Length: 217
Image (cartoon, rainbow, N blue to C red; front, side):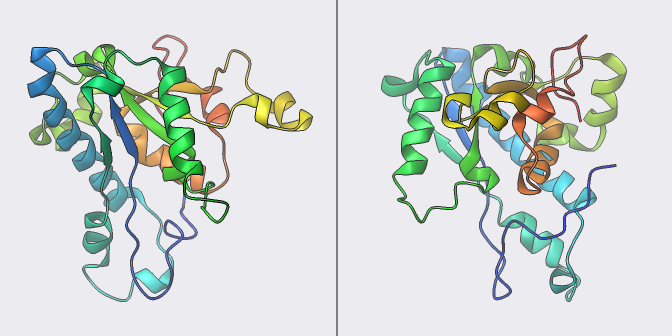
């Protein structure tokens, strides 16, 4: 069971918000030209389904029968797809770009929101795990992945590193945590919820499945 959401993505009471992860493509093989769009379509469909199935809702969003559908429709990934800039980019390079992007919004930017605190990287390794994933898999793949232990995953990266924290924060960092983790694609909505409720990527890293090396919820 995914955790209860006491508020929806920082929405005002006037309208449902736009929301979504920043996703970076870092592989540009011929095969990836076909697989990457397919992976994005699958990831977005999975997040929306999990959002509708597991999200807790404040009363303001329960006033209409189609509120969940409208809210999930507001999800939109921000895709960074630039061969010259990101081909074979490393995690530190993606982190630096995302940090600069977030900070470019100025001091008023809400850097604590999930979409501004972490980004997603799809490299060749990740993309191969998504190779056979399509929207048609959504209804069964959560159970199928667990049964086969063949998990599709992406890399979730935070831009705030320990060096930017005070000493107490540094002491709370999970052992071995380097500011990113492999994350099961069906756990991305859970990551969003936990970040919004002031959990940390480091805290989630402590819950990584040791046999798989992947965050599985």
